[in-house]
Length: 202
Image (tube, rainbow, N blue to C red; front, side, top):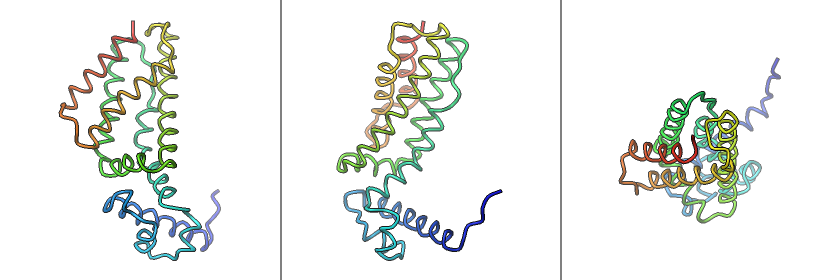
């Protein structure tokens, strides 16, 4: 049985949510570099002392918003991956690429803020690197699985392949976010999948 929250605890949750909502609005309106913690506090209609209880700066606040956005991506990365044939593996990989890139397009506005922040905040860059490593670790587990089951060439080092595979997907993801990708998404998905499957699988 869950403990009922006190009035003080409910107030704390509401205040934090108000700051996150205001932060998202300000980031989307002004971008990361032009956004200020003062703008966020004013939009949330909270006091400075209260705001700093929850977030030490705008970087800290954006990290929480990043995690909320990345939850969609994590769900894609952590889908069950236990193919019994190369054809089934190809279908699963293709679907994962599609969902990953589609998430980026759906979250384009916030991902633009994240991209800008990565280039200007060591704290955000460090957070992105940890997010990246989470994906790479999951991919390496999937590669190890198909190697153990005779579907992929055993000579490849899973973590090395996983890193290269994620970087390829990440590059196209940022291109779509920045509006710099002239290729049809279906073509990107097909080529990425073929490159991966034909290189790794037997």
